[in-house]
Image (cartoon, rainbow over all chains, first blue to last red; front, side, top):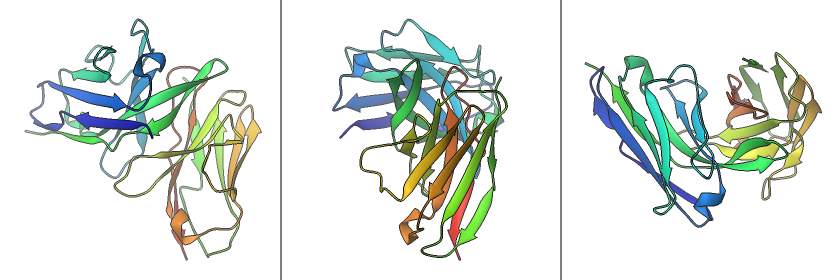
Length: 121
Length: 107
């Protein structure tokens, strides 16, 4: 079965930076779009960013645009999220997710277990 | 951007009950709608995509319906293992917005 393993979470002060990684296995990584989705403590799911299989097309939520950068290294089967200018409201569990195409749209069919990012002074 | 509104935000039901959760899009999204189940401390799990197609391995007591702006997730006979929070998500285009979630508890 598909495996997605996030890493890189931790504690950071407001204004700081952090890079999350997601190592994928048991599927052909380069063929699939990938996403990051986050969940603040006790809150619902919030889509953060997506990237197509080639890495050339990316999408961002307005809440992170200009501060976060999604990227991927298909040779390493790894997805990244570079997070800069972090804010207290970015505190959340960040999930890596694999997307699958459905007639023009892309939905998530597998999720990782998440990595916690805490932004606090 | 299209907003996704789920109702109710929580519900309590007994084993064997029929449970219905609704999701409304602020604009039409055809059938680009997925439903996910999330148990505490775990990543979400895909239940339904294309508004009504059951993901492989998901019990047949789960079903989805709707198109355009109004969608429904139904659990035909609630089981104890179905206690979880359920989310809808539209995926026709970015942003891939989620509904606010429905927490299902056992009465």
